[in-house]
Length: 189
Ligand code: GRF
Image (cartoon, rainbow, N blue to C red; front, side, top):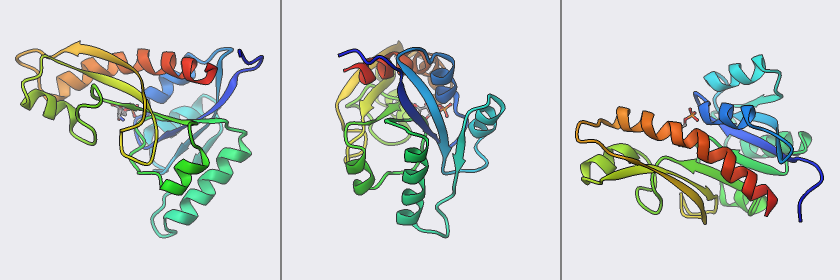
């Protein structure tokens, strides 16, 4: 059933936040970004979000422990009225308990053609394997790293002279297209 109002989405970031920006600049009647949260108070993406008038939440887990950190994050998400969470370069593993509380409400963008190259250094691994293509995937977050249902993928060619950096830049353009489109489909289903 189509919802009469936009779905309320929080975005979790740890750094630059270019995928978060892609979500913010494409929000429409299907979803609204109601909070940008980060585990790194110095994240560049947080400054951008503040400059653009978005509500933000920043808390570093160091010193308070994971359970207290996640409890505070969960409270901020509920305070903001978030219904969904979009992970966008969020570099921290969420606990099983947190994932269970938000079951089927968290999605992530991952810079590989899942199920290939879960985890880190995806572009370097794709080049080292001699793959002809690389890309990105949007998937539902479950307790198992990068293993939830894949909602969609975008593929790019890998060139003979590619480095992890040049491939990452080519993939990132596709990430910015794929993520808003998949989020839109996800909140509608
Ligand atoms: C992206 O490549 C994303 O796929 C990965 O981390 C990077 C984050 O970039 N999970 P940004 O912070 O969205 O610019």
